[in-house]
Amino acid sequence: MRVRSYEVLSDTRLNEGGFLVLRRMKLRAVLDDGSKTKEGTYEFVERPKGLDAVVLAIWTRGPDGRARVLLRDGVRIPLVFGRTAPPKPLKFTEVVAGILEKGEETDSGIRQRAADEAWEEAGLRIAPDRVKTLGPATFPTPGMCAEYFHLMECEISKQEADAAEHPSGDGSPFEEGAAVRWSTLDEALAAVERGEINDLKTEVILRRLQQRLA
Image (cartoon, rainbow, N blue to C red):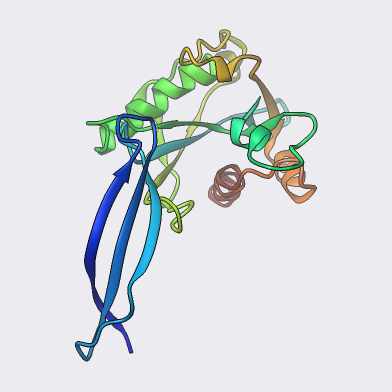
C-alpha cells in the first residue's frame, strides 16, 4: 500500500537560535485506502543560516596538459569528537565548499557564493560568471537533512594558480591550519580508491569533472 500523505501530530524545533536546529516530528502515514499507520517519531536537522551548499572543483591544466585540481586539507570537528577512533592524522581532504546564505538560492547567487568561497578557502579571485554547473544538484544526507549540494566547476590558468594568495578564511578558529594543494585529477581519484580521500562530495565532483573532461 502506497503512502498518500502524512498526518502531523506534533512538530517541535530544539536549539532554536543555534547554528543547527533539531526538528522532532510525530507523524502517521496516510495510505492510499485512507487507513493510517501507527504513530512514529522522526528527527532531522535544519540550518537556519542557509539550508543548501555549493561545492566547487577548481582546476587547471598542467604543463603536460593533464587536469590538476585544487584540494584542501583541514580538520572536521565531528570526526575528532564524533567517533571513538578519530582518523590519524587529523586531516580531512576535500574541495572548496560553503553554505549558501539567505538570498543566494538563485543561479547568480550560487555562482557568487562559489566565487566567494574560492577566495576564502583557496585565496583565488574568480569572477562568478566563470563558474559553471557540473551536473544536477544532489542530496548528500537525505535521512538527516534536506540540504542540497550544488556542484560547480571553474577552470583557471596556471598564472592565476601561481598568483593565489594565502586564504583569508571565514574567521572561524576551526579553519586554522587548513592548507591547499594541487593534485592531478587522476591522482586525486586514485587517492579516493585508496581511501585517502573519503569525502563523498569530493569523490562525486571529481568523478563528474573527469566525465566532463573526457
